[in-house]
Image 1 (cartoon, rainbow, N blue to C red):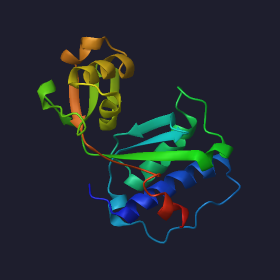
Image 2: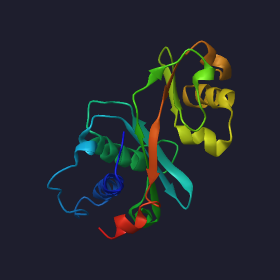
Image 3: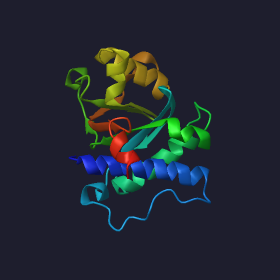
Image 4: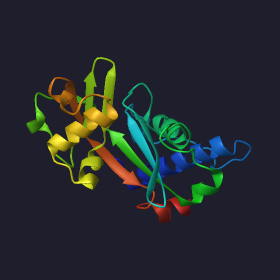
Length: 191
């Protein structure tokens, strides 16, 4: 999906405003929008990752393509701030330090083997029975993993399977357009 600079700024603002509205519902944090740009109304999945002082504090997403992108970003931002069981919820006083990273997802594609995975381009989704897990494309890069490490970590730590379970599981790849509030801070802060 092609998103303009303005589209990305707006998604970051919508995510931050949704978090603030959740934390302080009695206040208004963004003037109502007259119109949502067409690219943000496309139905696609998204992940929102939240960082405070470069420490991950929440990451939740959806592959669901039932809702427009802007709604998924708002919903995932609130969920990452308050419902990621690995972390304490974000506090209102932390929002000024909050770095918001948004990953806009392409549809998943089933693959036949690990040779179809390109580190840095593909995220992975593993499913076996009721167990499922995903890792975004940027995770393998930041962790300096090869393809087998990427698959093994996803199987074991995200899907709750054995390290090598990816060999017999259904494996899908997807791509993501990734951007964060640090890249757009001047535009977002001046809006």
